[in-house]
Image 1 (cartoon, one colour):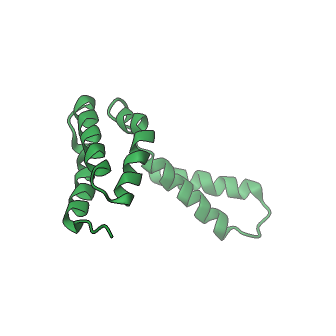
Image 2 (cartoon, helix red, strand yellow):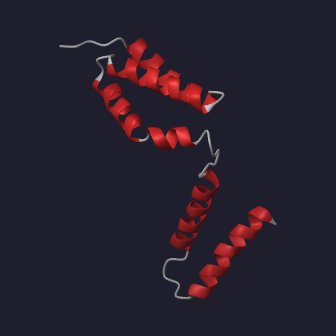
Image 3 (tube, helix red, strand yellow):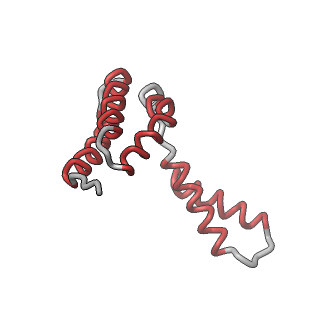
Length: 110
């Protein structure tokens, strides 16, 4: 039976949040590699799984330092469109639905 230190697990989880606060790509790369090493040697299966996942997405994570673009506004627009689709269930007028989508877009940027 393996017992792991909860404080170590929590500190590793909180440390990973600081990845986005690195000043440049090289520092972020060093930080990510060091964090992955600590997670893989922690003995916690969940942290090892996250470390393997970070290895897969390493390129995309580090790419954020070259192009600081967030998909948050796009996700918000998609969410508004899904909400409109649910409210418009049963209506057959596609043109009205398209106008509603355009109206939502204009409200944000008008």
